[in-house]
Length: 66
Image (cartoon, rainbow, N blue to C red; front, side, top):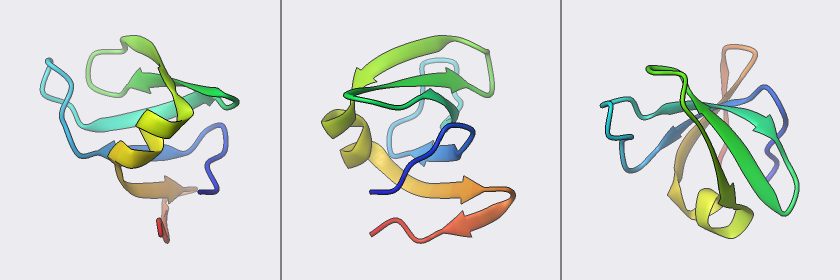
C-alpha cells in the first residue's frame, strides 16, 4: 500500500474520542498517526495499520486503497 507522510487516512475502528480520521506523520516499519479530532499521537506496526485503513486522502483527493 502506498502511504506517504501527510496523507489523511480513515480507519475502520474509531479512536476512543470518536474520530476515525488520522494524519500520517511517520512512515517506516511503524506508522505514527495523529488523530485529527483530539490530536493524540500513536505508533502502530505497519501491518496492523494497513489492515485497518478504509480510505486514503492525499491533497484532498481520495486515493485507491487496494
